[in-house]
Length: 110
Length: 84
Image (tube, rainbow over all chains, first blue to last red; front, side, top):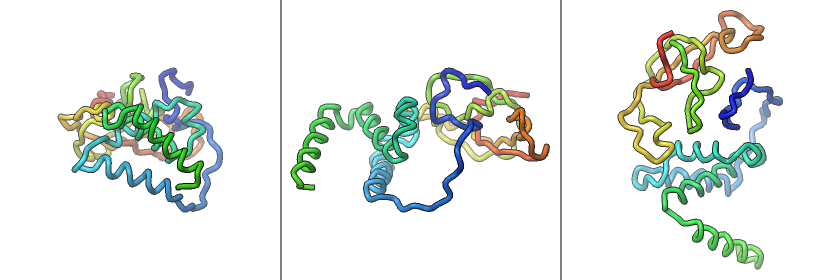
């Protein structure tokens, strides 16, 4: 069936796809951290975000980014977007922190 | 039941391939806050019934070559369903 123009890139049921990779793989440390971050942010004690907001922001990545980013990279972008939308962090704070971490990484301090 | 044929631009939990298709309710899974509201930071209350709906594969895919009795179950919120 033809795709409706408003169908977002994640809604792929029934479309042609390649073979399913059946191999198991380990998660990298940063991927486990991203997973843990969502658990903590959505915990009943904090309620900084819901998994539904995560999904909405993943769907909002746009088709090019959706296809290019890995599973947990999508999570990372969507968590950042949600926290900015909710006012938990600001764009400026996040930008400064990223610059700080990049500086430390460039100087071998991480 | 029939799944509503609608394409709102926001976050929806109903996959495109079942929209406008007929199926039968296999069970009530429970009631849950509406994820299509929670996706925007709202409460999603009152909680909405969530049904497991069974579709024939031949109803979903025009060129399906498997058995006529093959089915797929999809969990769909109440507000996406209408009488067939």
